[in-house]
Every structure is written in structure tokens, then in C-alpha cells.
Image (cartoon, rainbow, N blue to C red; front, side, top):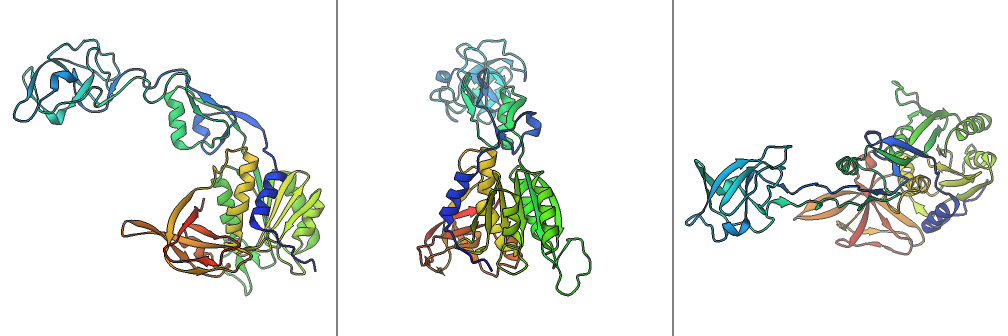
Length: 410
């Protein structure tokens, strides 16, 4: 039996950064299809946004200085000379003592430098009583305040979010150059594993949890999944199916078969898939110590533990980082963290990194991390959790009230 030669967490992260490089398949896609993809170009604006001064409220465009000193007891008076229509140019000019009605988003007429809200005025025929003074450019967005012509909007390596696509639409960009989706192969192994739609389980059988949860986590990070199904613990069949899947993908994940049992063939299969083969077999971490990582002819292959909590935590730590590398994405784009207080003492064994699942909860207007304890085979530990807290290898634990970093699950 091969013995685990465990690596530290930072060693594994550095190995990933060293061994795997971005896949630079560039394609042009419509922005409607670009969410979750990574930009392969810098994006510049060819125009100002907005292209004109516009009102942020329903109100009356005026010269701000004409309103100074206005109050409920001493309003200022203006002649209403017209209305600005939405989507049309403001044709009239505002002069001293004049006001023009402007809807929210409407163009600010020439001569005006502020807008008084309708709540602060009273119309009496063609006369406008103004009860509040306004400052210059109050309730106004000026031309180019959102985006200036030639401004860099987004950088190469940025993963496109829904709001980014709205920003692109605002400057008239409808197609973008992005890195093509990476293809991730996923296969579950184990004699005890059966499909999730199995209605009646025989004694000793369990449904395939990882084939669903890891599949979803990969897709959430903007990749395409090719699912290879469930393979029994028989070496030749395992190797054959792994080779078939390996040829179709950029990153292969094998769920189960990463421990040191006599029927766990994952490390042998990885060494057959390409050189240099297995790089890491065992990480000084809880949960997920027997995780395997290989470089097979430049492609990453990852062997996850079968227990669903271990598998998901290890994918979240290292699978996400591998996908980050392959996407060519900017640093830390897939990792969202919060610094909050932890609700209780949590001891840890010095020499390994512990990852504690936590629920986020507001207590007395402060955000706290509440540990979720349980064995690595219990999927409900993940269902309840919002993220996880790392207790580094050289700490003996954390104490109640200590500030900790919570890495949010994808």
C-alpha cells in the first residue's frame, strides 16, 4: 500500500499556480451570452455616458441661484415655460426666474444647473412656488459622470457579471472577446455508488451526491461539464473510462477512490493518463486529507474524497483555484471573503489546516460566524453552511469573538 506523503495547503496552491497555465481559446460572443465568461480584451468606451446632463428626479429645471433662501414661509417664484419630453432634446432655454418641468432621466435644458423636486414645489397655473433651495448640479447627473470617453471600463481577465453586461450595453458594446468555457470532466467511482434517481436502495448503497454537487459547483464557475457517470471499483474499466473522458476535457475530476484502500485505483490511473503524473497525494488538512492532484501532459487531474463534505470543501479550495488558472482570470476572482467574529472557541491540531463550515448570522447588528460541526459524510453540514473558516496549520484554534475570514461557498 502506498503511503500518504502529505503536503501543506500553501504548497498545494503554489503547485497549482506553477504547473497549470491558462487555456487561451478566444471567441467572440454576444453580451447576452457572456455572463460568467472571462474577458480576453480590455474594454474602452467610445463615448460619454450619459451623453447629456439629465435629471435624477421628477421636478423643475432652474438656475440654482434663483432658489437661494427659499423656505416654506418664504418661497421663491418662477414662471413655468414648458416641459421636457423623455427621449427628446430639451429645446427651450431656462433664463432668470424661469422653470421647465423635467421627468426623471430627462435632459436638463440649457441655462439650468439644478432640479427642484416636485415634492418641494407648488404649481399655481403657470406660476411655480419653490419651498426648498437647491445647490448647483443638485439632482443632476452631468455628461460623462458615469463613463467618460476613452475610459477603460473592464480589464482582460475580468469575469463578466450581470451588472458588467449592463455597463457594456450602456456604451453600445454588444459583442465581446472572451476566453472560451473550459471543459471539465467529472466521474464518480465506487461499488456502493448508484444514480440519484434510484428509488429503492439496497443494503450498502448510497446515491451519488458528488456527481451532482461538484457538477453544479463547476457550472457556477462558468465551465462546461462532461459527466462520465459512475464507474465501479474495477481497474480496467476505471482506466478505460478515465482515458475516454480525459481526451474530451481540459480538467478531469475523479470523485472517490482517493484514499489508501486496496481498491482505490485513482493514483494509478492518473499516472497512466500522462506525465509527470501524480504531484500531490495527501494534504495536511481536515477534512479531505487523501486528496490527489496530478499533471497529465499539462492537464490537471484531481482525485476528490468520496465523502460529500470533504469533496466539496476540497473542490472549493483547490478545484476553484485550478479553474481560476485555466480561465486566465484575474487574481481571486472566484473567492469572496468576509471578516467576521466567530461565535465560539474552536480547537485545532497544530500541523494541519482545519476548515470549519459556518453559518452567517446577525447578532446585535454584527455579523457572526456560527460553526457547523459534523462528520464529512453528512451532506446536510454543507446545506446549512454559508462558507468556511480556515484555522491555519500553526494555530491551536480560534477563540470566541476573534475576527476570522469566511470564504463564501460558490
